Length: 243
Image 1 (cartoon, helix red, strand yellow):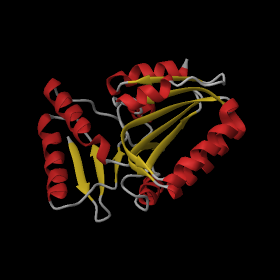
Image 2: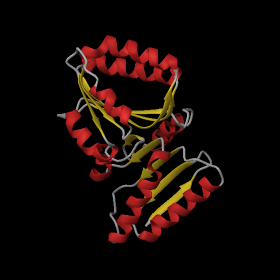
Image 3: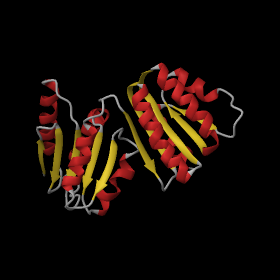
């Protein structure tokens, strides 16, 4: 059973309280699809639960996973509010198949989670999404749309802070939904790359386009390892970049 509501700020709140059925997921899907049909977009999702109740049956699980797959690229941020061992680990599990920024908050911290989701609403829908996984010394970046100079400048500032304390690290960059890069962002990228090439151990590029694989195959005079992966090989990309 799932209690669900879409708030006026376009954030979907999910509160599972019993085994999740196919009908539960269909009810949530109906609300989201109606919002999208009216021209709206989800600004984020918050899952609030003391424990993960599991699925009522196999149909419930497959319906749930199908819903996630359908909408995963439309959700910029996901907040998990729980002390459940399973849900606490969800951000690490979900990084393999969700393109959202994900954060965990302890039970009772729903207000903090909502503030974090609200902060994400100020970003463009095509914003760069990012994650830092210290257990793997891995920076994850996903781009949906066009990279603009201002957004890339914010990303560089964030990456500089990570590299200053944790270098060398590896990068996993998902370019599958990249639509373009403006000239200012290109210049910033060149400057960042030349400055920190010694701080980056591996770089995995994800994308089915031929240019992604060509980019990875260009010889470089540095010790940096670069490898391209198709979107279907995302699990392999995570493992390679983390090894």
